[in-house]
Image (cartoon, rainbow, N blue to C red; front, side):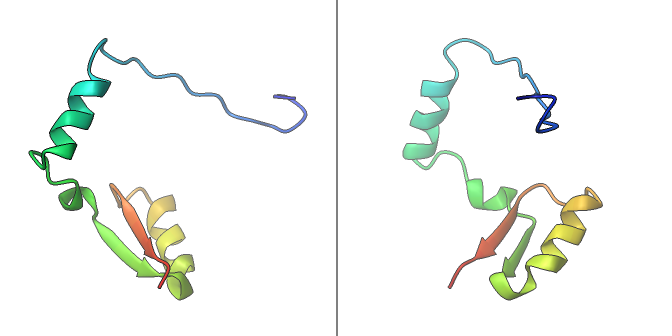
Length: 66
């Protein structure tokens, strides 16, 4: 399936016991996740969002579905 569908598999290293801590910090609003959004587009402008993504010029792109 991997070769047939030309899938790319990436691995990551996670520190143990950090997921629950991160959820706690986010839930208590100790971390402002909104600050990670570098670009915001409407669904009509998704092509512009993809251009910025492909150029590596964004950390997080938000597509507004409204």
